[in-house]
Image 1 (tube, rainbow, N blue to C red):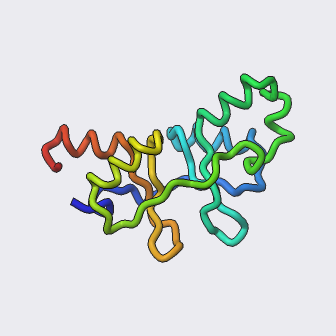
Image 2: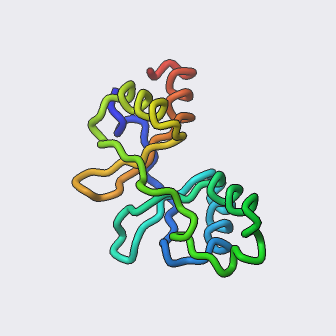
Length: 129
């Protein structure tokens, strides 16, 4: 099975220039724990996860500063990617090796989807994989 068979293509995105406060709303609205971060040209440049936000809060930069900080200030870089034609098993191994919960799917440098650990577990549980 290929990554393209399991990936989600409808993505919530945030721009690296928006405030962390705005991005937190985007994460909450999308009901996800991580979103791809794009630059003004729409290119994938990072990932903003709930872990990044919690880390910032733990460092004492919390609520007051969330309105002042931009996503680029706290996002994780580089984003971890995989191709749509990669085998799902290889993608799972990559997630484990990198200790990440998701890989963003790029095709010829264009963001086309995301595959998460939960997508793979769901495929196993439903007998698709």
